[in-house]
Length: 178
Image 1 (cartoon, rainbow, N blue to C red):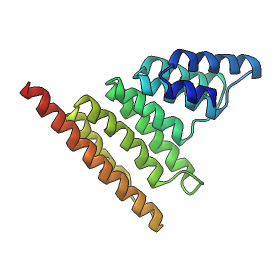
Image 2 (cartoon, rainbow, N blue to C red):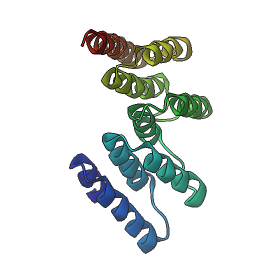
Image 3 (tube, rainbow, N blue to C red):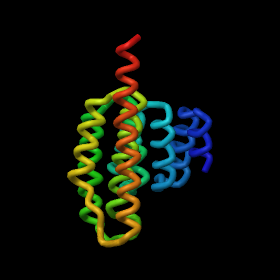
C-alpha cells in the first residue's frame, strides 16, 4: 500500500497523511492501513503517533488489531524506550491470543513474534535489563502447542530473542567502555 511504501521510505508524516485521507474518504480505516501507519511510526521510533493511531483504530474506527498491529505497536514502543507500554501491549497480546486460541493466525508463534520485536528494539537501544525481563516473560508465557510448526516457530523466536538480549548486553558493554 501507499502507506507502507511511505513508511519503508522513512516518510512517516506522509504515511499518516495518507491514513487520514483514507479515513476521510471511506469514513474509517481498515486493519491493513492502520497497521501500516503504526509500522511506519515504529520504523521512525515515533511512539506518540503510533499510540495515537492505535487509539484511533480501536476507539474511533472500531477496528480490531491483529498480530501485525500488535507487533508494530510493540516495536514502536520499544524503539522509543517505552518499556512500560511494551508490557501493557504484551498483556493485550496475551489476552488476544487466549481469546482467539486456535483461530487462524493466533497461537504460540504469533505471541512469540511480538516478544521478538520488543527484544530487537532492546538490542538496538542497549537496554539489557529490559531485554532480560522480556526474555523471562517470553519463556514463562509462551508455550508451544502440540503442532510441530508451533514448536519450531516458538523455538526460532526464542533463539532470535536470546540473540537480541545478548546483543543488548553487548551494546551496553560497548557503550560503557567508551
